[in-house]
Image (tube, rainbow, N blue to C red; front, side):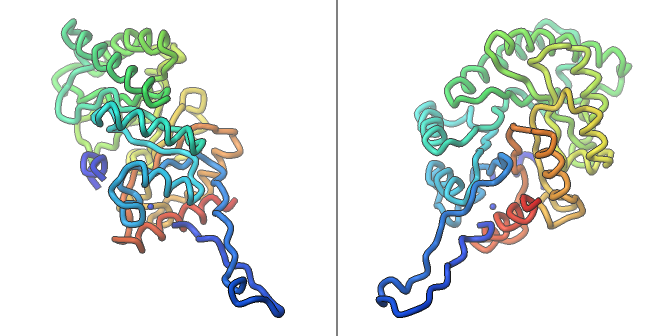
Length: 306
């Protein structure tokens, strides 16, 4: 599933009816229901995940997600939505006691930018970061997603890495002042060829070099299963620098339980590590319509049962 297609576009087990017995009025014989319990971790549906149940309205989708027990929401593209809608989303999430995930600050899948020592590139990046900070403030987010663009195959990787680090240092200063955290996302080279950042160890090295609390790693479990596997050991090795997660199963980039990744074990690991952040459900659904949305929530109920 292409990342850009996904950005344009999940009912675990519904509450079980309680059996009743004895002579009771017919009206009371209807099964009693309780709202689904909240998930242990902050799994975050994305816009469109529940459109068949909740309809196209973004606020209705958030309400539906909350009613199913979700405690987070992620909309990487919220910066492109009208300011009035951004403010309404923030109010609805606060009313539902839900956490919003990252705001997209920069991601260019077709150009090399961060890898060059260029004042114009620096100015452009700082402008993007400052704009994303304003959106994040409006929606009560504190994470900014950054994908550092393509590499230049004609240029030594050492020089490119040094340039990326220097740009990130400048961006981190802006984020530190705003109380925000950039999260750098490595992407797999199969779906996104020629990207500069692909591996967890590479992201770890860069974050340590930037040496700022405002520059951390976004681990996309789907991407890293394709790129290098060894998921939990890599989490352990990079733990001090990880601040955000995206998930999706592989192959197919659909909900957990549809591929080869043992998400129950991964979520158990995150829970036992005390991870309190958002886990963005950045994937599609294995089935269409309302049935697909029910299957999606059921999958998260299964994987959250540890």
